[in-house]
Amino acid sequence: MSGTVRAIWAASPDSWSRTRNSSPLPRTATDGYIPAAAAASNMAIRFVTGNDGKAREARAYLDGIEAVEQVPYDYTEIQSDSLEEIAIQGAEEAHAELEGEDPILVGDTGLFVDALGGFPGPYSAYVEDTVGVERLWRLVEPEDNHRARFKTVLGFTDGERTETFEGTLAGTIVSPRGDDGFGYDPIFEFNGQTLAEMDIEEKNAISHRGRALATFSDWYADQ
Ligand SMILES: O=P(O)(O)OP(=O)(O)OP(=O)(O)OC[C@H]1O[C@@H](n2cnc3c(O)ncnc32)[C@H](O)[C@@H]1O
Image (tube, rainbow, N blue to C red; front, side, top):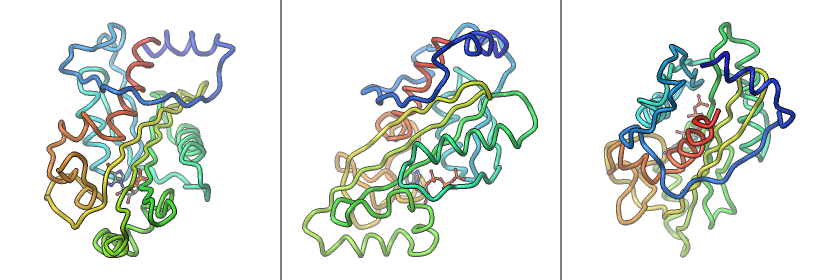
């Protein structure tokens, strides 16, 4: 499949990045949604991340659509307020630096808290590592407005063409609950449950990353 896809992409005049809106209803492998060419190929999408939780979710979502190989390459995270710019730069750097032909997927995520003016946003990883999730909750606790939003931007490149796909999830910051998931999942509530109280399929069905993966897999199936 990769040869065919690359030939089509290389011939396309529309060879630059664009962001697509997230699909409202993510499709899953259990929908029987497998691009015929992908099923016949031994290609893997290289998901570049050091975060095992992100890789687990991508694998669970794309299972049956395409093989996903986790590659823990630490690409440069440019100083930018734009998750799109970070994802594009990360995908293209990883493709240039890593050996191999298979396409690259990266995902950049931010948690945007209304009462904190969108903080930590693109700096979410740094804030998790330094301040921690529990203390972010304590920062939000005294505020009247606990609304927040996750946004994920996936960056995909095969070296010829780069595309971005976005997904968002609106919810509420709450006191930590739940043992599943990773990162800010214990303090992010959606529909009465924190993301850490959901199993991986439940989270993928509604989450920012699941929605971005849905848009990506819709697009990928058309290639
Ligand atoms: O850059 P890589 O190696 O992929 O790993 P990362 O953990 O830095 O990945 P992100 O930039 O996407 O994540 C930014 C922060 O947001 C957290 N995060 C990302 N997705 C999340 C999710 O679905 N639920 C909860 N927290 C999440 C994550 O733990 C980081 O602290």
